[in-house]
Each structure stands twice: as C-alpha cells, then as structure tokens.
Length: 164
Image 1 (cartoon, one colour):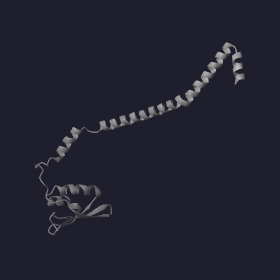
Image 2 (tube, one colour):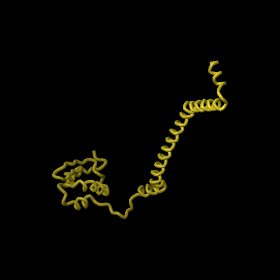
Image 3 (tube, rainbow, N blue to C red):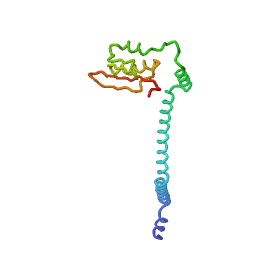
Image 4 (tube, helix red, strand yellow):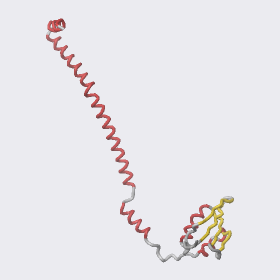
C-alpha cells in the first residue's frame, strides 16, 4: 500500500486530478447501478400500472355514461307497473280458438280441465301464451309439445288455480 501511495504522490498534479475524477466517476456509476437504477425501474413500473388503471377507469366511465339515467329507469318502471287500461277488452278463450281455426286440432271446452290442441310453427307458440294471458283464464300450467314435420303439436290443459 505504501508503494501505491508513493507512486500516487510522484504523479503530476493534472494526472492526480484526472485519476481522482475517474475514480469518483466509477464510484458514482456504482452507486447509480446499485441504488438509483432499481428505484427508477420501480417508478417506471408504477407509472405503467397507473396508466392502465386510468384507462380502465375511462372505459368504466364510458360504459356508465352509455347506461340510461336512473330517473329514466324509475319512470319506465312506474309505467310498466301501472295496471293495464280498461279500454282494451279482454279476449274470450273462444275468440282466440276461433282466430286460430286453421291451426286447431282439437278443442274440448266441456272437459275438466279444458283441453286445447293446436299445430303451430314455433314463432306462433310464444304469442299464444300472450293471448291466453289476456283472457280471464290463467295461462296454462301444463302443456305438451311434440315436433312433427316442422310444426309443433301443442296440447294445453287450461285449468283454474283452485283445480286439484
């Protein structure tokens, strides 16, 4: 170590200053690699996460803005909950059967429960329940469907709620 110190002292002043500057630069680079660089990487990672969270929040806000207002939903619910006006006359079961005359296979109004058999295309099946709901009779609680040559053979048993 003494030998190294003696060589150092023999160098000229500009060379000693150059060596000190080089040594301090190496120390600064080591400090940067060991301490500051990992902190910069963590900071950059946090910035990326923050940007992703901002984008997700913007997407949620856009979806929320696309939904109808709460007041509009309340008014729509109130309109739907109002009882149907008495202007529309309730259809009788006989008028529904008569309107579907071409589809009628069998109709037994005197049997208990009443029995109705129709041959329907699938798109005609769902509206049938809507029509039956508009009558004084309840919507059928029992029914049977059989697919036959592209049509539905529909058999309905129309019974009152108090039937056993």
